[in-house]
Length: 239
Image 1 (cartoon, rainbow, N blue to C red):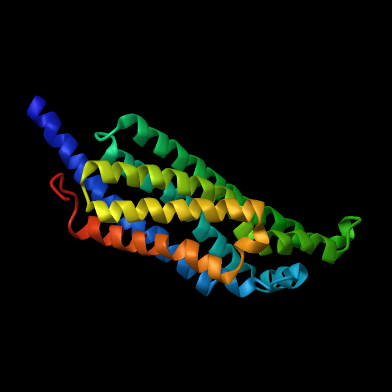
Image 2: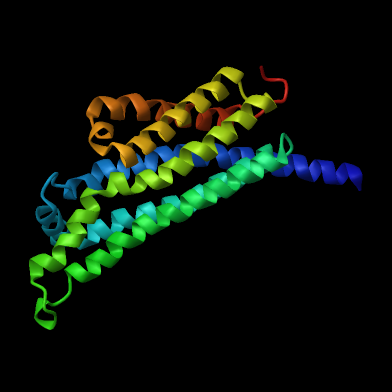
């Protein structure tokens, strides 16, 4: 019975490794394509009303893009659970803390999806049934969407924290090269800093050079670790 339990635990861990590898790639590639191909097309910087009109001109594509973001919130839960199964044997308490932070991140991400859905409903309302003009009904939708990056900064704070913990556990586990795990800690520390900057000094945070400095490393890490876990898996003897 003891041997069967160990075999089952090892099998569950290996499945979690493959799921985590896939979800790392999914979490980077899908939102990047979603923003580049869909959501960015609606944004008119500095003109919330024009943004709202762009959205209302093609609500199906907007709803599709927002639905993908909702799917990403679910994906975060799957990634967190997979990493927890992988790493709970290293330090169960830290792994559980990281999972809880990941669940908070996913919840906040889902809320940021809910807000534009609600605003879209107001924007499509019949102005004759209210005391507001059509433009006043549409304005919140444009304002919310133009502030999308700033709004998601709150969830990104939790992303930085939970992934720093998971990467620390990967560093302690020797499941992957220590250099890769250390690079992950640095990458998500920069995400944490950038997210706090969006809250404290948004004009500085939105500068293109800062976007490159703070975000590119985490994308590279997600691609590399995703491929590593899918192709090589984990080994306690990796150094």
